[in-house]
Length: 107
Image (tube, rainbow, N blue to C red; front, top):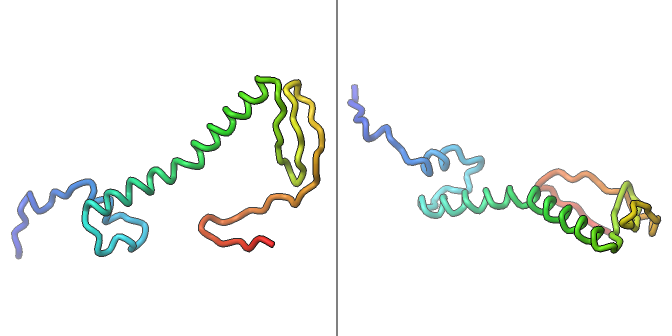
């Protein structure tokens, strides 16, 4: 029976993360490259919620300066004014649901 040494049981957090990686795209990469890839993926996951916060703040800033904004809602584009009233600008195609990672052909 082989003898296990304590130091062989200790692995770095990066190696542990690499072993738990969701896909095999890390094969052949160095630990530094894997670390960089994981950091990039972490930042990419932060974009959608961060952009929503920034967009909402910009919208409020524009309305606070007594300017109107355009807003799409259920297949319609409205001009929204600082006092809250809305004016229908145009009827457009309603939004579609898209699965993350899929490709959609736009006409």
